[in-house]
Each structure stands twice: as structure tokens, then as C-alpha cells.
Length: 185
Length: 116
Image (tube, rainbow over all chains, first blue to last red):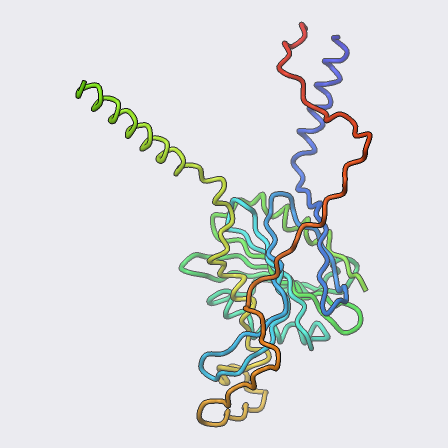
């Protein structure tokens, strides 16, 4: 009995120690017109909003524009953290992705200030990562935007946002998503 | 008799109010409300395909002005479009249980813990 108790304690301790790392165990595939572009994993206890291709109409000019699928996710119990993926049609390179971002950033955050731009690899693919700060609804936000160069003339754009006051432990979750990113072409 | 009735009514009303108050505290089921999702909505809205503010993008040619007046009415499709509602995913038909179905595993009713 004594030995069993000791081994049980050891198992419990190892579980506690390993419980600190974030886990992202729900794989998700981003498809465009039936073609799988990339995949990533949603962290545990996060909610994924899948979205889909659609058209949004400008109320002033009255013509519709096509919008690619946006996948957004956030912790179920906390809206200070947000992460989204999109693969816009017609954007084929990292440079094109950066131009696309120039047209999207002022909707995402106000007064963005870029603090760091790095060239790296995400999921084995060349990527450009832009980190910075801005504000949204009077609150400061930290953003990390990545443009990932997918094969066959597509890019994936990942936006991760941490509002001021967000639990820094969520950074592990966000990094787990990046670590799970894979091209599926 | 009347006092008893008042007492009972007060008790019933009090209990009802208490249960309502308690259930209002049950915030777990509220969870994710997608009514307002500012970052998601912003990511949909971009000017890459459509310049609203031309001042920012100097390199690109000006967009032609749309023709004045209201756009012509859209033609009516021969088959009426179904009302715009999200696709309902029907759960797949449940497989029939096998004839020799194993007994359902039930957790044991409370058992006293073994002595250590």
C-alpha cells in the first residue's frame, strides 16, 4: 500500500509539473474552395469562430467586396486575448501580405506602433513577424502579426492580440498555436 | 388561517426570488457571446480590395466613380432563393446498437475509501 501511495504521489507530481505547458490539441484545417491551405491547433478551452467566404457591402459606395474566411479564436472565459487567421485571395507573397496588412491594420488597432519586425520561419515556412502596440476602445493592446508564405502563391496571415491586463500565461497558448502551424499543400 | 396563508405565500415568493437571484449568478453558461467581437469584425473589414480612403494609398490609381443613382435592381432568379439562414448541421443517424450490447459501465455508487 505504501509503495502504491508513493507511486501515486509521483504520478500526481509529474502531472502537476507537466500541466504548466499549454496544450493545443484540436487540429483545424483552413480550406479555401475545398483546397486545404494550412492547419493549426486550437488551445484547450478556447472557442473557435470559423467564419467563411462572404461578401461585405460598403454602405457608401454600395458595391460588394469579397472577404476570405477569417478564423478567430479566444479563450472561453477571457476576451482580452484574441487570435485570427486569414488567407486572403490574390495575395501571393510576403510583400503582398504586408501591403494587405497596411489596409487592415487601422481597423484592427488605433495608432499602431511597430516595435519589431523579424524574418523567421513558422512551421518550416518563411515568415515575417511584426510586433507592436496600439490601442482599441481606449485600452492598450499588444499585437503580433505574422505573414506566412505558403506554397503555390498563397499567404497565411495570423494576428494575435493581447489587451492590456491580459494574463501573460496566454502567451504560451498563442505560441502553441504557432508551433502547431503546418502548411497542407 | 389567514396568517398561515400569508406566511406560506411569503415563503413561496421568497424562495422563488431566491432561486431567480441564484440562477442569475450562473455565469458559466454565458460563456462566449459572439454578438460583439471587435477584432474579428475588423479583420473582415479591409481596404485591400477596395480603397475607401484614397489618401493613404498614393501608389494606386484612383478608383472610377460608381455611376450615379441607384444600381439597377437585381434580376429575380428563376428559383426563389431560400431564406438566408445558417446551414443546420443535422446529426448523422445513430447507428443501431449491436444486439449483444455490453452492459453500460456505471460508476460505482459511493464506496468508502480504503484504509491507508
